[in-house]
Length: 341
Image (spheres, rainbow, N blue to C red):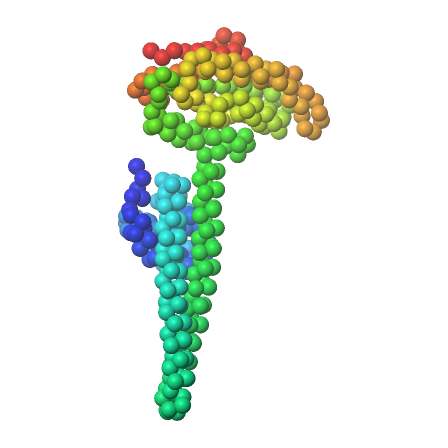
């Protein structure tokens, strides 16, 4: 359940309250800091407010370490979608402030022009009236300069928020991507699975899952070193990625374990792909970057299964794992299909 279910207007109001509080701290204005102070002003968690108040009483300002500790303790469930919502609220707030400042600036300029014309009209009739208008015009110029300064500050804040939005996008991407291979990680795989099942599947097709594991990978690491082991993982990952259809999801789900989620596929397509991946990896030869030596052979064991109507995700994934285990038990470097019950 997403705890950040408030409207954009309410989130903007809370951000309006959080901004001055955040700006007084020693921590930078990043999404982690936003999450802590957003929760503080929203008053959802009395324990968070008490912890923040206590830290402020002890330290005066929250530094990076204290802010991160508060985040991990009280806001650990704050996900990238919620961070995006906060950033969107911040941008909405600043955009509204910038529009208001622009409107006020335009009206001030118009008022100043009107006074200028009035001054010229009165200057020939009354020195006293002209002096009064000149004084008002001086005040107006000061107001115009103040509004211009405000607009410049708001523009700078808007640029900072845009940078923060980019950071949120990067954080979301990094949260679902395996940094070594560039494939989806376990979280990315789980999200892809949930999305696939949420939209439903055409009755003429189904959802298929391939569970793949590099055979004897520990020996690769022990013999050639972990650096070359990482090279093997990247090479296998890219090879799998080049073979699967674009609508599928390829993930690294463990150390040397991979998964391929195939939506809207039939049995023939799934089996053919599993065999193609296995054969292409078996036929490949991977050279060490440092010495040019070639590893004799890398093979994959593959488990394959399809999801049954209404089946729980856990049961679906566990059956693919059992199919993979059967391939390992039967001698490795093979594909085993395990039909659903």
